[in-house]
Image (tube, rainbow, N blue to C red; front, side, top):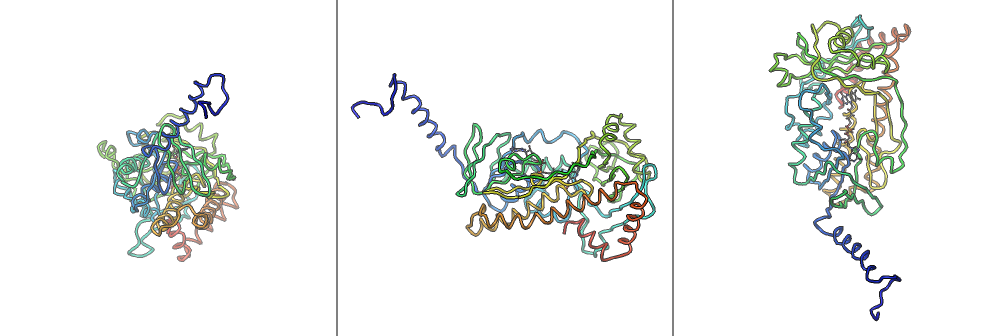
Length: 439
Ligand SMILES: Cc1cc2nc3c(=O)[nH]c(=O)nc-3n(C[C@H](O)[C@H](O)[C@H](O)COP(=O)(O)OP(=O)(O)OC[C@H]3O[C@@H](n4cnc5c(N)ncnc54)[C@H](O)[C@@H]3O)c2cc1C
């Protein structure tokens, strides 16, 4: 080469610089310290992504989970009024991933469910459905368990760092590249992770779903869900109440008393999900606690005695959403990234947990058999297993909301007759009960 540099430059000495940078970059990126490999990378450590990560790692699948938010601040310091109804069918995910044992406080079993139809100030019509899990046989467990949202977060935060097969990055910003051969997740300022499957569990606004060009259908309800907790004079006996009002459903969900509530001498605690037309909800949210509690009591009735607000109030505009596909090259959507439903039946998170169980089982058996967990055939099986049930639940919750959120006399009569018919038809009633349990 006669000392000649291989590129044209007025100052050949400086032209070594970019090459040095490129070489350095290459060394950093190929540094085994800065490069990881895993079977699965999960984007989003919310309830669905976090639980799936624990489920996979507990079964020995090498897994990485990444969240853009820091995890610790997601634990609100005190009882925050939000709660999940975890169906019997979803509990398997929490048991097998070791999360159930990490919940900081006991979950409240839902022993009975009462469904009624009424108007504000006229708490319950006489025709109501009453489901008792004991009607399914002596060995049948409860319909589900009420778990404080904060409790699930505390459990996840304690369990995620304890699993040897799991690496957690949060807060972290990551870029994902996918191809038929494999996927790479590059964490800004951190390692590059080579994996065979990326799971998008990033919630409703999933960036990975958008990058993959997966279309979604959205269905706005014009309603807002207000969630909060109350203490009350009389015990709830583990009974959940769904009270259908013309503006939307009003659900009362029994909670186990938290240590704080017990210390404050208030052992009777319930969570409420109150749906209203958005304009009315805005006015309600602006009321002070005492007036807000009075409005809630007008809808609830007096069967629990006097109610008092505890913790803070939250409100969410409600809409349904459905991704047209759940999969793409080396990508699977799970939880709210794939679907969103009306909270009328408290099933939103349960659908996400069922996604995690279906995908988790497929991945564990593929990795155990030495097969590719991101193979197109596996992804197609996952989509076949979950799209139908999720679509059916979306249709059912949407239909229930439309049927019950109406003050038309004809509809009121039709649904009261429907409720009475279910009440008098034991096989139909048992079918409803099994659906509520998610089994
Ligand atoms: C009023 C109301 C009441 C409800 N009540 C119930 C109920 O009783 N029972 C029930 O089962 N469900 C209920 N739901 C539904 C439930 O809250 C959701 O289904 C559940 O939170 C979805 O969990 P997820 O993990 O899929 O998503 P999310 O909870 O949204 O979590 C997504 C995670 O991904 C992270 N993230 C986002 N973008 C990125 C990114 N680019 N990179 C990395 N991380 C990212 C976020 O920080 C977050 O931690 C209710 C919903 C509403 C609105």
